[in-house]
Image: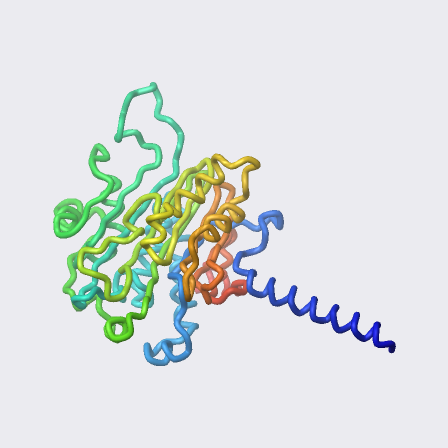
Length: 373
């Protein structure tokens, strides 16, 4: 073979390796919408994944996280069968809050005082105007939303957020601190939304205590959030819950509690849940930005394109700034990870009940069907 042919072969091989490496990094989304695949429910368990050393220290395995994601998808799927999209996302998030695996509910990150403080939000994307042309103001049922911030000692913060969303007359959309806990635990609210007051120790796991100490010693940033997006009958819903940053200042409220930053839903476009550096998601109104791109850009981007454009627009940081998950009213969905992020716990369930979960940047793996367990 001549020298010229050898050089051509070498260059072709290098090009193939580079292309393969590029797509290996960018395969952070499920198959493109035109393959016909649709989801009923998608979830995330937080941006950033534990490495082998952290897994060993936490006494857990990747399979434990996959099982918790699958349990969340099963819980949400079953709630969707007989209920609404709001029921589905609420149950999916409650499952993750109860698992002890994620930064939400039991197992939430601890603040500088070693306490668990929770933010959560839930939103319905319904945009059908009420009959009669009434001037309802905030009692108008379109894009209902509720949130809690800096919540303490309340099991299942996502249900507390729903209690705020469904306050009589849509009185408020966000409650924070002690008064938020007082309202959601009051009778009959607590009973209706299955809310319980728990001792501080209930929320604290040994791993989170270790993580907080490391954050204090080395100023290591740790974030994580759980979220779910579902669609039923053309109505979208989103739910997001978190303990926030490890070693955060007492009183800090992140993007999760702020509608438009960590969560947003609009049936005309999509529903979005975010996880990552909350301050950046607040400053860039990330969840609403994805929706706005679909509503106002021309030509209109797909949900995958809008989510990718949004996450790429945030100033990146070492270790990755975060992830958004999104679904449109036809069930097309996406997981968009920032470029420096090693992974995000996530999964989806199809309309037929097929379950897929994973954490790295590659494709998710099939783990059976809803009825298998």
